[in-house]
Length: 607
Image 1 (spheres, helix red, strand yellow):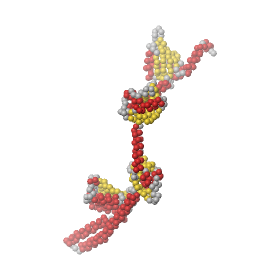
Image 2 (cartoon, helix red, strand yellow; image 1 turned 90 degrees about the horizontal axis):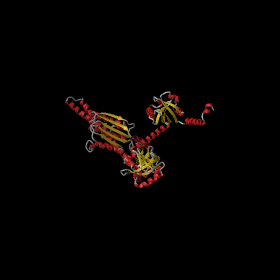
Image 3 (cartoon, helix red, strand yellow; image 1 turned 135 degrees about the horizontal axis):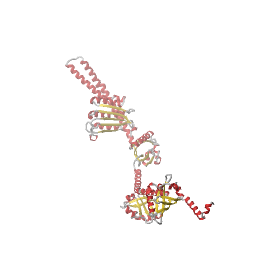
Image 4 (cartoon, rainbow, N blue to C red; image 1 turned 60 degrees about the horizontal axis):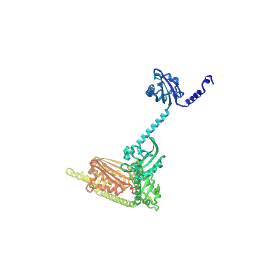
């Protein structure tokens, strides 16, 4: 021990040691400040914690203006605190200090003035301070959290409220609760949670409140009553909290009234659907986009000739003709893009070797996002109808063939007899003309012209009865002379667009030729058109003929097909439909006319 230390009383040494230890272990610091006659403060002494916190030593602080340590925004508050001390009052101040490193620390300081006993002037002050930065940040975080919580509470789309656990009174409600229940905020705050329940539900409510007082609670099947008496079905989530010093519970309400009604309606709809499917005389099915069957009624199973359980999934495809299934899947893909209903026919081979024809009509099933997720529809056994159709088509083929054979026979007889005879007459008249002169020659010229005109008419009649190109060169070649004749006689320009990749069978070719012949005759007689466009194309295992003109048009709905001049529409429609095809006319006054006919290549292509 040094001599100086030896002179220090033992008790004082112990006190200083304790002070040193406490100073090193705490962020609190004490200080003594002297104020000179000019009012300038200088720190007389300050504990070490200040230097650890600020980075400044006592000498560095006193070397300049003390206020430079204070954050600029807090200097007015510091000046106000100094004014209080100068009046002999104690001062409490929270202010920010800017450290040597540029950090900002919040300091809470309490100071007491030292006054000159003779003059009463403040000669200094003593104080204690502590670093409250962490506390301030914690309070600020808490304040921000509470602000976010209140904003969330206020703006939540779900009704929310807080109630007092002891009195069950509402302590706070959000706007969604006010809107949904119809009570004003003041009305809510004057009520208890019992007041929004039907009377018969209150005992259960009190039991639930007691049982869940201190725990998170989620419960269903509650009923609430609005101001106008409406009963709401709700789900509740609640948890314990303290609200302004009171034990309370935060409640979040999920109104499931509409959902429960929708679920009930769905169950009822499902019940009716099942009852309908059971009693329906047709098959009813549901498939996804892959074709997997999720539902098939008993009638549908009978049509496929196997139990419904074996038809589900992809089981129904087992005996379907592969080419028919491939066409159906192509139709599904097209329908998914266009969102259209599908009507399609399939051949199904039974275990007994008998082939059944099934007609399916399916509508797209659309989910909540508007996406097609499958198809639902009906199945009908059309085997007998198909057999009748086959017989009708065979009969038609025979009739068409007989008609064309008769036309060919008549054409041959006209060509071999009247045409040849008239041609011989023409040749003799030409020979006689060379021996005559004057008026007799002119008369003979007139007779010769009449004979030539008759021969031309006979040849035109021959072409109309059976155009030679129809058998040898095809449909487009047979239609072209009709268009050329129309152009010569009516000054109508024409376009013939042949998109066909294969020539239709003779009976289909003949039906379309006769329809085209009649359509072009109508253009010549009625349309006053300047241009006509004829298109031939392959469509859906059949041939399509389209005749479009730019003439005056007409209103198809007002046409009396019984009147002369309009019988051709009946004839064209009957020809197409008898051949198992389709026919349509589209026109409007001043907008031209479209005649369209489709005939299948073969009996199997129908549907």
